[in-house]
Amino acid sequence: VVYVVKSEKTFLIDAGTSQTNEKILSTLEEFKISPESINAIVVTHEHYDHGAGAAGLLKKMPNAFVSASEKTAEILRNPSEFFETTKRHYGDAAVLVSDYPPVSDVQVVEEGDGFDLGSGVSLEVVTLPGHTPGSIGLFEPKTKTFFAGDAVCNYNEEFEFYMPPSFPELFDYENYLKSLDKMLGIDFKYLCMGHFGTQKQPKAKQIIKKAAEVAKDWKDTIVYVYGKTKSEEQVYNALIERAGDNEYIKSFPDFIRRSILGQLIRGYVLSLKL
Image (tube, rainbow, N blue to C red):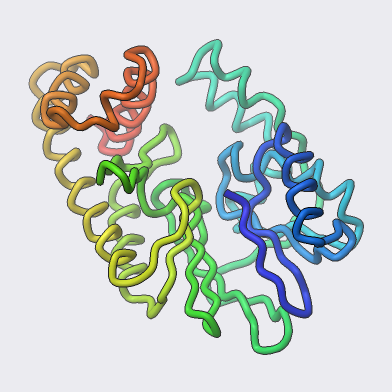
C-alpha cells in the first residue's frame, strides 16, 4: 500500500516497486493529484516492495525528495547489497527483486524528527526496528493516524490469521517485540499497515497485542522443534499443525505456503542464532 497524506504539502508514504510506478501515477491522477504536487516520498523500510519504486517516481515528481532512516537510506543508495542478501535465501527467485534502482540523494530521519505539511498536519518519525533494522513509522497527530509500514505483522482480517514479518536476514525478534510495545504506547486512532489496510481503535491495538502473542508463540515453537531437530521442515510441519484448519493458510498452493513460511522460519532461526 502507498499512502497519500495531503495538506498544503503532499507526501507519499512508501513507493511500491519499480513495476508499480505507472499504477501509482495513474491512481494519483484519478484523485487529481499531479506528480508535480508531490513534495516527498517517505520510505518506511528497506524492502523492495516499499523502496524500489522511489527512483522511478522521482523522475516524474520533480519537486519531491526521498526520506528514510539511515539503514534504509543505505539500501536505497546501494540496493545491490540488498539483492545479494536476498539471493542467499531466495535463490533463483531473487531475480524478482533485482530491479531496485538506486536513489543517490536520501534525506535521513531519526526518532523525533518531523515533517510540517501545513494547516496543522504533520508527520512525526517513530523508529520501529525489528521487521528490519531501518523500519520507521509516521504519526500524524491532528487525525491521530499512525502509518506503521510492515512493523506490525502479516495479518488477514477475514480469517483472523497472524504471521510475524520475520523475513531473513533483517529480522530481529527482540527489537520486533520492543517496537510492538512502543506502538501500544502511541495515542493513535487509526492504524495504517503496509499491506493489510487500515484499522480503527480498539481493533487496531488488539491487532498489535495479538501480533506480540503470535510472535512469542512462534518463538517457543521454533526454539523447541528446531532445537531438537535442526530441521526447518519439522518446524514448518509443527506450525502448520498449530494452524489447524485455518482457511487463510490453506488457501495458498503448497509451494507458496512452504516458501513463505520457510522464509519466516529462517528469519527466526537467524535472529535467535539457533
